[in-house]
Length: 223
Image 1: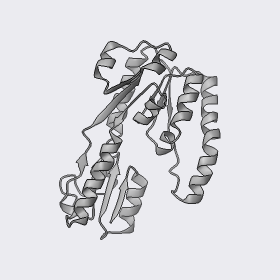
Image 2: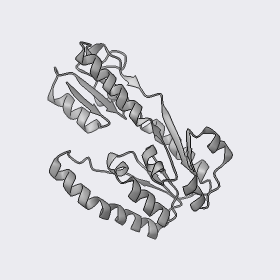
Image 3: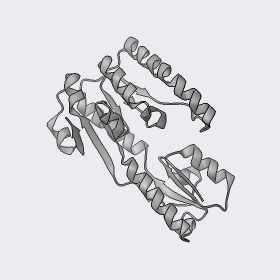
């Protein structure tokens, strides 16, 4: 069988490659719209998995950022327009070029002076959590991230799906299929666990007084 958690391109590639080998995916978009399954309750084919949402979560994360930095007027949104093939050569090239690319992005921020930064979910960005935190602190840019690891590395805040739980669910479904369950009969699960993390130390360094109502709803406050 094929397990492809956390990657829509990989899930689509697996689905295109076979109609018989069982597939367990983890995707942020609607798997019905993507063509991975016929419907959520009864997938009907060789694929099933977890829908961990992106759009809905991002809308709330943006609201939380605005609540955190109410005076922000210009919010820069950082996305990765490229889906890089997961080959050893490409990964090596990307790793070497990554630092310079992110440095260039922050250089443009220094010129444009956004009031806050909103970072789109992307594995490449998460892998550079420390660099993001360092540059955002240097340029005093309040930033909202999709993954708790980025807040733990020094980012101001994060809100997103509980990623370890999503991976665990993919593992559970994988185990069930290996024991004989059929993907066609296994409903697509939808994430119900989301994490809101505030790095209070970073907030203080940025001169931000975090509202009490945000502190009260945070799943974790990093001192």
